[in-house]
Image (cartoon, rainbow, N blue to C red; front, side, top):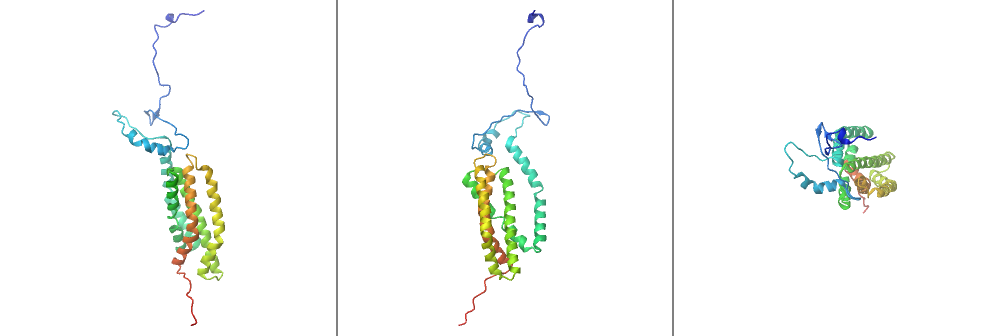
Length: 242
């Protein structure tokens, strides 16, 4: 009970068709994609081939743009920094209201740039790429450091208000905060170790580990030094009876 194909058709033509037509902003497009090997960073590989790929001559009317992780990272970073100035202004306003003067917030601000030492050295030693996740980790690292600085400044203020001599208060406050700050930093650094081999979150782990290592020293040494400079604190000279 079959009918010959020639009885219902005049012939057969075999033609290839695109099963999926890709469009970007209404224009037809093509996509070339690949996945990096385990342990390789997508951004590092993109950077290695970017120059050769961008030198490819395209026909008239064609254009090329990078997508994937690179596009997503740049888009997210743009939105991340759009409202960051507002966050900085609010943070400064809160610090001024908290301390009641401008010198202590200035101490907090001056302690932030040295974090770059730990972040840069961490990136150079690990060979990671400073991408979107690393930027987010840096912002979180700044929050951790500010919290430690505020606690130390509050400890100094408390000791001075209790009648302790200012130069002694600086030393004692650093000594009393040494153990909790060191232990908190150490536990966080050790907690980041499992993420070092991850392609996406590895840079973030390096940022937090390197930044906390330097940030701990900044908190315990640099803060008392700046406090002594801004408030004119010095060790009294010993008066000889001779």
